Structure formats: structure tokens, C-alpha cells
Length: 177
Image (cartoon, rainbow, N blue to C red; front, side):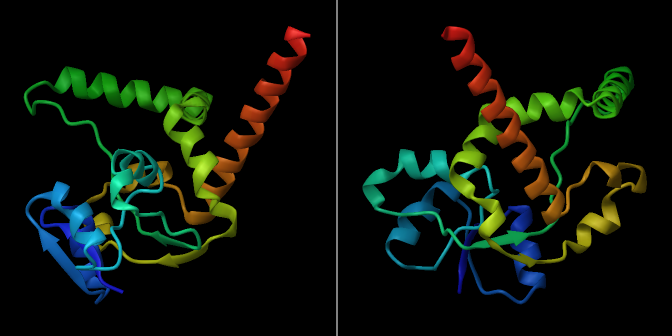
């Protein structure tokens, strides 16, 4: 199958390194009509991304694939001015505290993004295909590896969030009665 990707997307090199066929464009917004016109077979998006994109483009009559999960490490970073080392240190310190005391996971699990992923993605039943991101291991500081989720950890994280969401919903209903 051929993927449609943005020329500058980090995914583009990962798919190319895995010898998967790609069609690239400089304008990501063009990918959706290109997919609808069968220029390629799929757009690789983060597990949290397709639902809102599909809703915005309902006229294109596209759907999210339900059985496969491509997995490769991909970073999401805070970027600050290189001269603002105080801000960078405060962000790193605050994130370290939030990871250690569990408040980061709790906040993330309650987020709209994770709740929509739980609602639509059904990660537990998908077949996972692992791809390597050679830039990830080359450019990621070893001290940050603890923040990355494997596919099994991702599924467990989402299942825990689903359980906690159901418990909160149950308690709210009980309080109303």
C-alpha cells in the first residue's frame, strides 16, 4: 500500500527507510482530496488524529482503517528560544515532577484527545506493525527514553484511561441520583 505524506513530515523518512511506497506533497491539506481520488491508499496519522480530520472532511467519504496500527517512536517536544535556558529548565523540571507524581498521566488520560482516541481507536484489537525510526535513537537523549510508550504500554495507558473515565462517569450518575 502507498502512503500519502507531507514532504517535511517526520513520518516520511520513517516510511521511506522501511521501504514503504510514498507519495509526498509540500501541502499537507492536499493529501485528503488526493486520498479521495485514489492517488495513494492511506495517510499515516497519529492514533489521536484521524477522527477530527475525517469529521472536517465528511464530504470526501473517507474512513479510518480499523485493524492495523503502525507504530514507530515519534517525538513531541517543547521548543523554546535557545537563549531562554531558564524557561527550558523550568519546563523540564516541571515535566519531571509531573511524570514522577503521576499527575501528567492523570491529566493526559482525562484530556479530550485521549478520550476521543479511546472512543474511536479500539487499540486492543488492532494488529501492530512496528517500524524503526533511526533518527529517534540517534537524536534522542537516553535520559528521555523513560517517557516513550511501547505499543503494549500505549494500549495499557488507553485502557487505564478508559477504566478511569467509566468510573468517573459512573460516580457522576450515582451522585445525580
